[in-house]
Picture 1 (spheres, protein in one colour):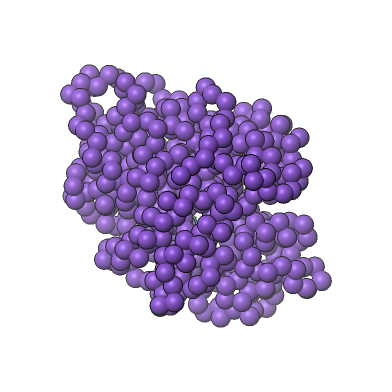
Picture 2 (tube, rainbow, N blue to C red):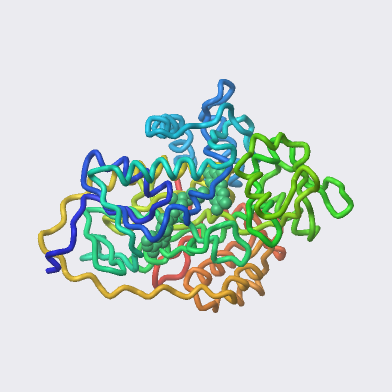
Length: 464
Ligand SMILES: Cc1cc2nc3c(=O)[nH]c(=O)nc-3n(C[C@H](O)[C@H](O)[C@H](O)COP(=O)(O)OP(=O)(O)OC[C@H]3O[C@@H](n4cnc5c(N)ncnc54)[C@H](O)[C@@H]3O)c2cc1C
């Protein structure tokens, strides 16, 4: 037996907002390890600008928030997950305030929301403000060990996940919560930090978990051309205008992201005019624009769409449970079915909080580990993410897809690229973020999730 490996009640993989919050929720009840590679600054969480959606305004309610979420998901959002998310939102905001996060005055408006309900901090630095407070709390907590390591594989014994294999040894736990983020950095143009390539998603699949909804990738419409800096939806909520080459408006700036992104893509080159916006409300963003050499008061900024958020991931129930005993997932790597075919803006940080907490609490209820564990298997080396692979995903599984491109991508030298291609081929329709030029309409027969399990053909499932 590998007697010397450390043993925890909960092993959380990932140091973004889902992982940090999950660890803090569990730490009062058990001993927790957060195993994460690199600095919190390198997470998507740190880069989130707009905020966290929560029905906390006087004119708002969880039911209205749920309606907007279901509308964005184009018939595929799980009503049960939506109900949990929107009902628990206000309590999770209170948790953050109790932990020391200072939110700005007032609520923001973003595309697809029928009410002002975006709670934000630092004038466009919401992710950084939340993640830095959570990281500080985690580091100070006597019940949490933080291990700066790359997780290379899951450690399973007799079908149960009993820990993780890292680049320097194993870490055992009664339960493992994967909070490893999404995979939008697999695409050539992306808003995500470079490491966001779905390693946790791939390792869960190899360990026997189901993956779902991989064809649904949200492309953010307004990213500074050639630079990757995201110009938050909140700017359009506050009056920023999209203009074509002739200086004319061509779309409703607050239409769903897929609609705005495709309208921009059709025109090739467009600009975002920030002059109607009170720029003093977005100090962090204005500073980043100035650093990149732009003066938004003088001239509009050239923008382009980029891969931003992956709706699909490791299939879980409402407590983060995967199909592998002892293995949980939360945050962007997970797929509760909440986002359906398109994520409503600012629902993802909320998802990290609501489902991160639920997964942590459920994981703590797992039984103790047997006294002896078989040695962990050899880890699988990470698959290379080359410029050619990223270009192929952009070209063949980008904003506009067809069967020929997706067939080509099926032979890509990367597991997740192949699974994305297979899912997108099965979904021979256009729905939400997934647009097939050869099947441009929604097909009511495809109100189902495309689910992959290792060694099997993809299946179509209806979820409650
Ligand atoms: C520019 C930008 C702006 C955004 N704005 C908003 C917004 O305003 N509102 C909103 O709701 N959402 C927003 N999003 C989306 C949101 O930020 C993410 O969905 C969310 O932060 C994901 O959090 P997470 O904890 O699941 O993963 P992440 O924050 O991506 O963290 C993943 C963690 O897992 C670790 N990890 C990954 N693989 C391994 C491995 N093999 N071994 C060890 N560690 C590993 C990483 O190092 C990292 O610590 C934005 C995203 C971006 C990129």
